Length: 446
Image (cartoon, rainbow, N blue to C red; front, side):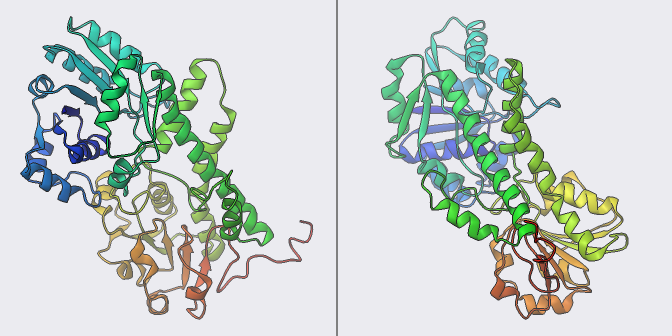
């Protein structure tokens, strides 16, 4: 099949590249000429493990191309995939200007029948609006399909090629064989439903996963007070097949481009039909509060942070990505600066993106994690990059002014901490090192 993918962000680029792997010919389209030039040089504008190798292979084999000419790309394609951004507006609702603009341009470019497939995350009812908008700008026939994506940054290629399921929303049943053919080789688990239900599945899925994260973080906070270990609690919970082990890792909360945006959008969707989504509002509130647990633990150990030197390990919202959108690190670093600390920052991939969005005279940018630790009063681990687990903690402690390690992702084990001299704080686990944390005499009433 011949596809045009409109938008070369995470969803568009990964989807376009992966669709070439089952024999389709794909044109990825973007208005950003610099981005298109970069892609034609086989350089990815996003950090995603394996993406550049696939771009190079498929460009050389002629199945993949990049263009800024939307009209010509649409005319050459059978299926046009909408993968433009739907960022949050100040009130939390999705901003649909970009997808509406792209839909209008698609309609004006059409010279015959097209299938318009939406992969962007859009509120329920948006595909119907897209249909009406396109119909108002063309007399050519077309069909609308909703095919929400469920990829995770850092494992986006694997998630696209080997998904748990593919959701297809249709109102024309005759399109089902074509949609199954388009996704052949990815999975046999294709769930076909109506368009509005497909739109809702995306939001409901992300809201539920966000709920699991906030729930286990609340459990972690209780564990700290009663002397339990949240990692053991989560493991025991996850053995129940009704619960499952995924998304039960306690930490400093979720970030990125999906969960914050989609939870707020679903709250707005509910509000638009006069329903107050109390549970999801609490999920969002818990997540916002959880990241400041890092600041509380620093106060517990250091008292005032004015004049303190704090090292930060990890700025991306998760490992294996350079995405700093809604990353907990942003608010944590801003809080440290506001309290008068000097902050030394290190991230193996995301430092440039973080610095482009926020810089300050109190920030020191480091090229190695050891550099961020040297002379610091405390180190705060905010992103669980694999390289942090292998750092020599004995040597690290010797380079610090005060030996405090705040592990916001529960990376280290008791065995790794013992004998290092570090005062170690984690999330929802008994303290190790300099502080004992739980005291039966204090918690006797529990």
